[in-house]
Image (cartoon, rainbow, N blue to C red; front, side, top):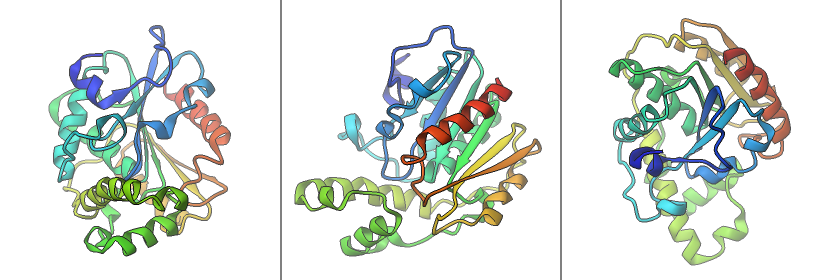
Amino acid sequence: MGNESGRWLRRLAPPRPDAGLRLVCVPHGGGGASAFLGWTELLPPGIELLAVQYPGREDRLDDPMPRAMDELVAALTDAVATVADRPYALFGHSMGATVAYEVAQEARRRGLRGPVHLVASAREAPHDEKGGDVHRGDDEALYAELMRLGATDPEVLADPGLRAMIFRYVRADYRLIETYRPRPLPPLDCPVTVFLGDRDPDLTPEEAARWRTATRAATRLEVFPGDHFYLAPQRHAVLAALRRVLTGSG
């Protein structure tokens, strides 16, 4: 991969040069590429997984974090364009679903190859974005939000140094997604599949189904047992569903 894609995209397993489809996975707010560790082993050889690494965390700890969605999307689209020499699909969880949608729109705006499929997990459709003010609250309010969603192990946040580091990039991500305002854009042309935990505190199946207005193509909803972060406990079921979705798209 080139310099731009190397900054933003991670291979978490040996390359698959003969793969016919690339799966670009975009993590949740506060997450990083490591959220997708162990996924490649559950995908068929014909699919190569590339995980997005946001700035300001993990091995990009010193990189400045974007302050607005447009800035993030422009840089990530640059990176995706360098690996779009073969068909690719986008998977995004929570904030990552919105980022993936915007990357698909930006690729079309630039006349680049777009995704063959978008899988949006645990996020309302862009036109239903609710905004929010978590990023404006103090550390206790941010801690309460993370505990509500089950996003972070409380033992990790008990360490003052780790807590300060994590809160820095989590707050930046909340600011980015809570100040995001989608532009009125034509629907996408690719199919959209929506994944959802059946106990997600922020999203109902009826709300998730409204992704159908984000594309001219087919939409599908798959519901898994679990809350907002159902992906980890349901990893095998999620990857089985992804195999079905991507085999059809590829």
